[in-house]
Image 1: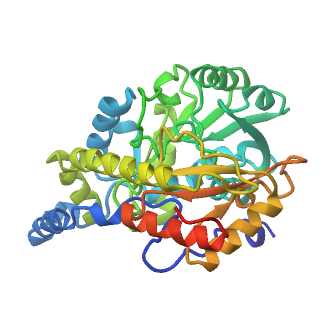
Image 2: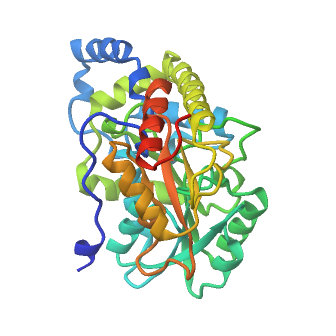
Length: 382
């Protein structure tokens, strides 16, 4: 029964269109560089790397991930704490498999990233939705959930609301985990995309008690089909996670790991991060500049200081459904906030929202999509 209810929707086909959620700028990836590094590796691979590898991941890549997180996120970790995964979703699934017993209560943001909730539910968790406000997860509401010892959060850029978890809430969340002898799964999926101000330290960098399991991915900088992510684990958990992962898939493809290691070591990754951040900022600005000023039943666009998506508040779920349906009929992709509530756990009187990704296509395509939206929504031309 759990598998019937808790599964991922089929992926959208075709090339990304405005305003597809969860994908970066594929058009800017340096495929020629990647192809050159890949050809170099496979021209004469070391026989030592062609057998069964370490289930925790390629040692060189793990060292480079740890070094990158130390410099970019202030996360004091070493390679022994890093487990390479098949994207962030496998990292979340491993957390569910190793930390959840059937019947355990697990706190998730509501609205939130449903794929994470599905992973915990399939492991037998009882999902407890926790409200999100302007400071992120409501830590006071979390504290009121009896018997809960695990929380999943997206603090850098909450999915889908787009808010950033405040420093005060981060400290409260860490204190909660210490009091409950619990765990926090921190999904830092959008951390490279920060447009204003200094990014707050991740929970894992503030953690002094070994309570935070940090989930990261390369898919939001490169492309989702790469399927490379990583976990940074408290030292006491690293070996158990690697052993459990070995049962699922032995280890990740050595070619992708080796090429990514060289991509980072040669400085290509850091340059690409800077380029992607600049492009995402420009695409965000195009959306903000050309978005219709007044849409009946819609609030104004929110500030967008981080990430690759935004959520426009809508006064009612009925109006949300109408706007999303007309947009999709006009060939414009967007999601309604209704897609992100836990089953049966939308609060009474909750409004709606339009969730839009703005990084997938260049500025010209964004402007053209907004022109189609104006016609679909019976708004005056710009």
